[in-house]
Image (cartoon, rainbow, N blue to C red; front, side):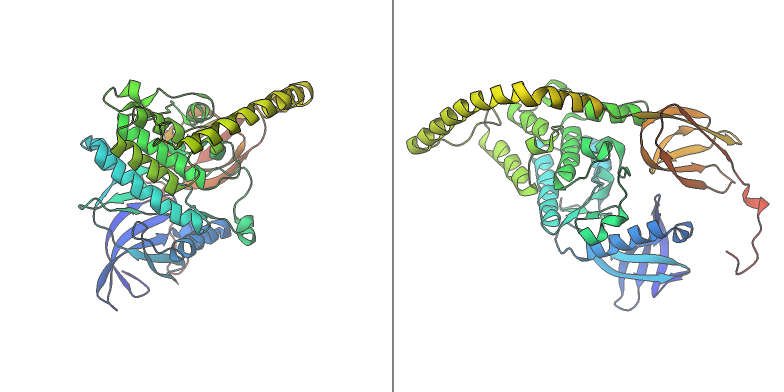
Length: 403
């Protein structure tokens, strides 16, 4: 089988958007990873545009730690992207092995942070940083893959991402991504912080029995301090991890470069606290003291004004911004179909769970039956029933040329 000039050799994996193949490019005699959009996606212009945007996004980048895109084309009624064929292990497999030292963890996360710094500087936010999207070669060089839901910070492309649409993998999503707010590079760095927490403690900071529980934990819960979960972890390293997953974007690392430098500093300097810095000169200390005094005086004046006039209004608005939830009840005929929400497996029908208001991609899958998929908008409280009758594969026989 071929797509364009590329000869398919074997299937490497499947996702919610398409299939990835190992393929051969006869023109220059090399192996490539060929990502092919699922044919049923071609009927949706939204998904076609998202897939094409992936090619354009990665194609704009040239970095040793980001997968290289060679070509994009159309064939067999669908779209494909030819990418660099990577040899190595996805980071999620390495995490499961639990064999990485603190030095190795720091090296891997620093490489990812530097690559994200480059992407963000070029106006691209990945939006789905997770271990399976990070490949580690035998010489410990990393490659970030799958910019499939990358958000290019370009006003002309803003229409392609609808307000409130939730994309990404729930466990690694930032709080602002969970509640459907606009995200920037700090959201990617938050996701990387979750990975750092998981690699350092062998556990994830936020857990839940279902999607709604995970979302609540991300937006409201404070995770166990890493050094308490893993006592051998240096205190300064633990503090760094907590800074990287702070719920407030302005209190996290602001750039990937800043995060990478902090990791190297804490590891090499062996400081007892992350807040410690190299000794400042007397002149620098005097300036710092003067700034603190001025800030303290201004704070007293500003604090009185704030609490007298603005605080009551802000508190009232905060109450109004509580995330509303809807109750989704999914049933199918026959029962036992696997339910995927935004590409994440939730369980089997029948199933009930509550979700924040927003737009979701729901997919039902069952052996020997055609997959069912649709976009679902949840915008009212109370129960939203969803019943799907799955069609047996042998019930529909298409004639040649009708697929």
